[in-house]
Image: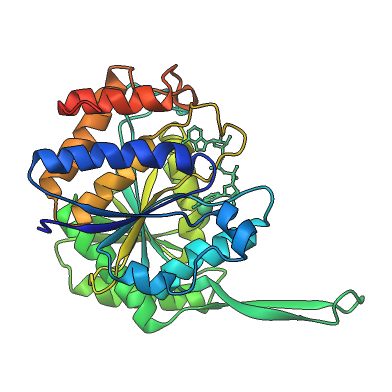
Length: 354
Ligand code: NAI
Ligand code: MG
C-alpha cells in the first residue's frame, strides 16, 4: 500500500472543473481519516491554457507527471478548439508517453438509477481495451487530394507483444473475478488482424486453464451485450472495438456520466491515469447538474491501483448506497440531485462530511 501517494489532478474543461474538485476533497477526507496523506498536484492544463499559451501540456509537463503515482483527470474538450487537437494534445499524449496500454472500463448496473433496459438483470463486467495500437495506430495518408482519383489509406497495427500483453492482463483480471474472458473478434472479415488476434489469444489462454475463454464476433457481441449484459465478465478487445463496446455499456448503466475508466500501465513503472468516460458536456456546463458518479468511480479505480483496496471498496459502496437512497441521483440518471448534493450524500454515507 502507498502511504502517501502522489496524485496529479487535471480537471480540464467543462464539467471536468465541476466534478473534479469535490471528488478530490471527498477522497482526501476519506484517506486522511485512515491516516493516509495524499500529495495532490493541481494542474491547470485545459483549453483556457491552450488558448492563452498555445499548449495544453507546458514544457516539462510530462516529466512532472512522471514523478506521480497516478493522474486523476476530468474531461477535455471545448467548442472553440477542434476535438482532435484537445484530445490529441492532452489525453493521447499522456496515454502514449506513459505506455498506458490497458484501457480499463468497468461497467455495472447501479441501484436507484433509471436504466434503459426494461427488466434488465444486474450486471458487472469489465471491458479491457487495447490503448496504444490496433486501429488507432495513426498510420496512413492521402494521395491525389481533392482529385477524382483521391486515395486514402489507414492501416491497423497489431503486434504480438501488444496483443499478448493485453490478453494476459485480461486473463489475470478474469482469474480474480468470475473467470470468463470473452474476446471481441471479427476474424471472418478481418482475415489478417483478427485471425492473428485469435491465435495470440488461444496461446495466452493455455496459461490460464482455470479461466473460460470464448471469442465472439464484434457485431454479435454488441447485440448480446444489449440483450443480456449479465452474461459477461471480462471482455478483451482491440482499440476500436473496445471504444464502441464501452460507450454502449456505459449507456446500459443509465448515463455516460456514471461510467469510469482507467488508462493503466500495469507494471506501475509509470503513472496510470483515471478519468470518467464522459466528455466536457458543454450542453450542461455551468448548471451544477453534472453527475459526479463517473468521476467518483474513477477515483475508486485509482485507489485500487494505488494499493488502497479497502478505501476503494468503501468509496464504491458509498456511491452505490447514496444512489440507492436517491440523494446522489442527478437528472441524467433519472433524479433531481445536483453535483454538490450528490457528493455530500456520498460523504454522509462514508461518515465524512464535506
Ligand atoms: P459528453 O460525454 O461530453 O456528453 C454527451 C452527453 O452526455 C451530453 O448530453 C452531456 O450533457 C451528457 N453527460 C456527459 N457527462 C455527464 C455527466 N457527468 N452528468 C450528466 N450528464 C452528462 O460527449 P460529447 O458531447 O460528445 O463531447 C463534448 C466534448 O467532450 C467534446 O469536445 C469531446 O471531444 C469531449 N470529450 C472528451 C472526452 C475525454 O475527456 N475523455 C471523452 C468524450 C468527449
Ligand atoms: Mg469513446
